Amino acid sequence: MTEYQEILAHASRLPVDDRLRLIDELAASVPDDAPPRLTPEWIAEIQRRSEEIDVGSVQTESWTDIRQRLFAKHGVRDAD
Image (cartoon, rainbow, N blue to C red; front, side, top):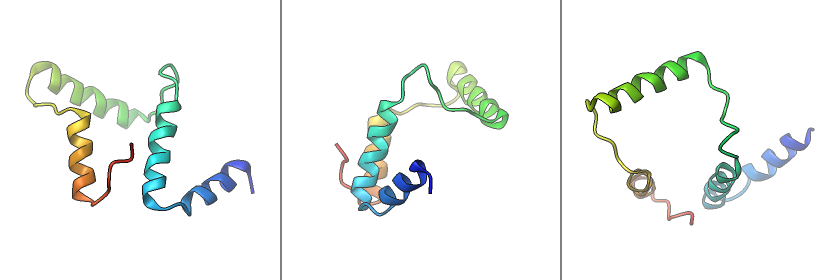
């Protein structure tokens, strides 16, 4: 078993709240200049959505509002 697989196996056994907190903390630790690798399909979707925002055909929401709504919907307390 690789180190990654071992860490994943241990992390997968954490309670849900701890897994969500871990996800947040790992995501925050990724440098801005190291974006994830995206497929061409995802790049096209991002470009399409960005154009919708640029022309004003969609209304945006803050990440804080979206996160709070999702946490409430799924009965998860804030991971902060």
